[in-house]
Length: 256
Image 1 (cartoon, helix red, strand yellow):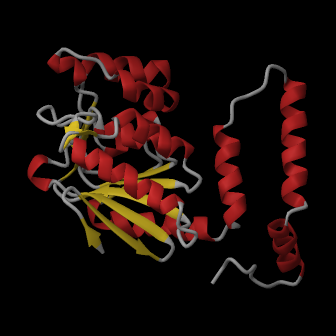
Image 2 (image 1 turned 90 degrees about the vertical axis):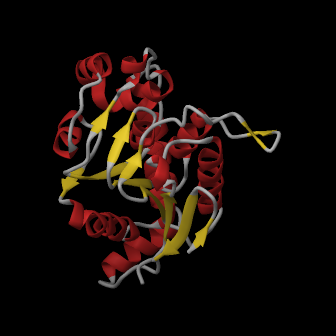
């Protein structure tokens, strides 16, 4: 494992683990932390040995939101740091699937990481809140990645009230996929990693693009685009290998 001032980074079994590591400040999003996080995301995407990326935090919290004393985008040693929206955009557009393991409290901007991620596993005991209104501001940037999951119905209530909710409620409103006891969090995440690793590497990249794609103006254009996409994948080397492995009742090359 390598460590820097505000994050930890480790590659295990084809997964890059990025851990927010400012427990004394409940992993608040400082300029340094956000910049390091962004650099680790880029590093992970550029590493062919990495199949997926895991985000989590050093206990007791996942992320308390923005560090108001040293917010993202401010200068580090005279150089402007990475703005937080750039991190959220990178997660959404990352070729590698991003899994977030919510190990503790997630407030305000911390929920942006959850909203941007592809798969979210949370501890049941987690407490979350879109708390911005309680300090007189709004969850503007994170609304872009959270509202598609929450919808207007849940988003309106949670944004307006700043109410606190647990892991089970996060699943209910669409922010998380699974809520498990805190002691089982990382074993549950490993289950998700293992399932992703069963898929072809290129197929995983293309599937994420498929889910995130913007629909065309007409249904006919959608079918045309996706039909061409499907043909490309069936004609690819990876597609040929997957079908051959199925016929021959063996594992494809990407499964160790």
